[in-house]
Image 1 (cartoon, rainbow, N blue to C red):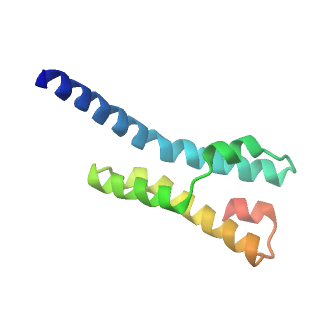
Image 2 (image 1 turned 45 degrees about the vertical axis):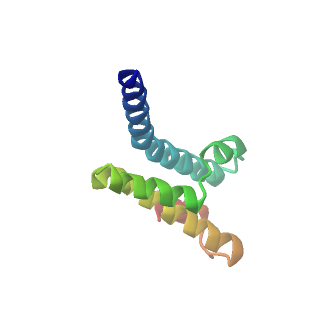
Length: 106
C-alpha cells in the first residue's frame, strides 16, 4: 500500500517539476507575442488571458525554483515577466511617453 502512495507522490513530483520548468518560458513567449501584436494594432486577448500572471503567482513560481534548485536560466524568464508586468502597470496608471516598439526593445 505504501509503495502505491510513493509512486503517486513521485509522479506528481515529476509533473510539478515539468510544469515549473516550462510555465515561465511559455508565459514569457506569450507576453512577448502580445507586445508584438499590440505594436501592429492586433488585439490578442486570448493570449493575454491564457498567459496573464499575477504577482503572487509569479512569487510562488520564483520561490519554487529556489526550492527545487533550478538554474538562473529558468529565473531569467521570470525576471522578464516581472519587468514586463511592472512596465505595463506603470504605463497603464501613469503613462510612459514611448512608442510600443521601444517597449518591445526595452
